[in-house]
Length: 96
Image (cartoon, rainbow, N blue to C red; front, side, top):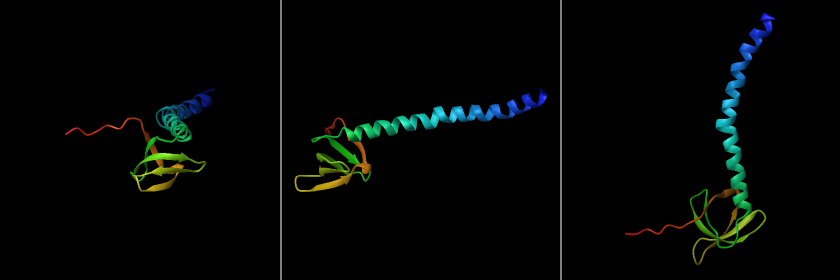
């Protein structure tokens, strides 16, 4: 009986640490990945995006693996969906 108690007291801290790690790290990261995947799947023409490289662009056409985006009036590029960092909901103008 005492041997079982020793095993329980030695395993319990590991279980508690794993639970803390799960709720503080793993679960929020999974939620963030799901939200990012949803955002990527819902990109449509006219949406403003920022790439992982820091480029601001406007979506022209959302294709299966790539996104055609306009950087300015003359430059249109194809961007891999995996390199879209975020969607810009509201463009704030600089007031000077």
